[in-house]
Length: 277
Image 1 (cartoon, one colour):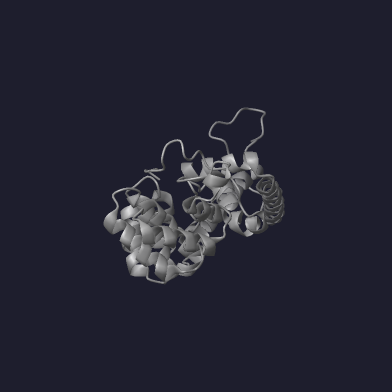
Image 2 (cartoon, helix red, strand yellow):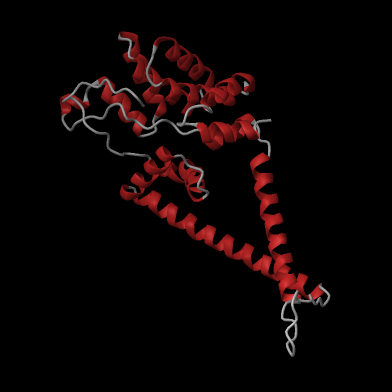
């Protein structure tokens, strides 16, 4: 986010208080993208910071890393067996060297050919898998599920103290942090009924989208873009997510094409456009 209009002295940096009961389903795609080296810098730093303080996430991270090692070993073992089968089926080949040395037999032969064939087979296989995965079409709803994560609360967090904790805006953001999105929506809505606060509006749209209220989220983010000059890139990203959720691919593509020109979401936008049916 580019703006933080919280009053100085009333609030301090946000503390992590996630609902660990839903951690595996929430972070599985994020951890997978970390090992696939497809996270952008902001997502990578966010995940690494969480790993330092969140033991359950660290446990999931270790489990997934071990799982990937097992899969990699299985793939390499299968490839080795296939290459051994290929080697046994190849005819004996001798390649004459350009210059013959008297009394010496040619040393370049069947093994050299095997190495070249194996390298070509591996290159073709890996390239085919990569190209297939990168270009495999996905439904808008699947792409939404793979890429949507509620924006982290960087706006406000309560200090300890009964008077501060009773503040409605603090309560709303505490509910958001705890993934109690229904309560967050109620709290944000009451605040907006009394005052215009564009950052509260932004987080209201995130809470609505996390609660599968995508039509309401569309209206919220569209209003945000009409009245705010801050956090425009982030709002466009979540509006695009809302359009995907509603299967409005035309509107989503327009926003994603715009986001391709900005460093914040260039990788994600390009990936979705490539796989969008």
